[in-house]
Length: 311
Image (cartoon, rainbow, N blue to C red):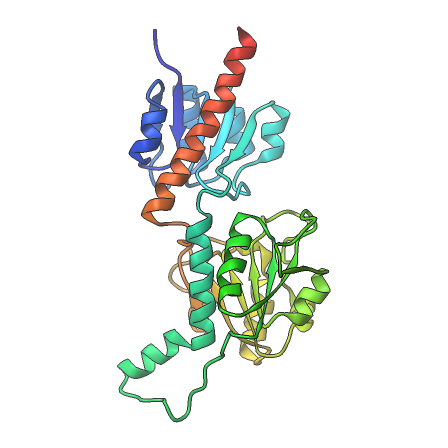
């Protein structure tokens, strides 16, 4: 009897995840899967599940895969999946919630520190032969306020780290009823007004696209820092670049972008007070395993439930 197939939109998967999926045939789409390629693989292999690492799972991909039961994200953000199209077909969409929270939270804090301490420009200045001790002043985070937009697993861990550094934590998340001890929930306007550092940790939706725009940036403190390890679409790029250029913001740290990959000529390339990383906040050896295992377990849970109901 032939085995059911799982399509992985990537070139590899952690051995621990593969062990969980040992009863299934695994087909890899490669590191840069496009819509046409995924449609072709869906028609050819008729997978019962798609494990999403790279690329977009569009309505066309979903419609080309009639056997599909579950789409499972190798990570947290599901904005690359057409959830509405999946729902129309009764296909479950799952995310590996919390699997990469330690890695992304650490990266968010690394970007906060890099911006506050001017690590990147000072490194460049020293390599060019300068010694700026007499002229440079960094930002001390102790006693400053961290504003969080989104208080899921990543936001909570970021808050815990920053609180240990002596920061006050204010949070805006309409889906959270209670903050952790010593932290305060607030309206979006209050968080924007109070934050010395604003860090984004919410999913991207149609409602919050370009949440950070000229109007919201204007409500922030002069000299504040903005960090985004969530989704690039949360930020209006032109408005952010303007705020960085005119001194409204001290600096920004960005790990996610509206259009990826960000290569060659791009908007942020020549902006000196922005720290950039290529969407690798969750890319660690430990997170790779945790996300793969989480995605695999989500697939098994859905397929197991389907099999039990069929029996």
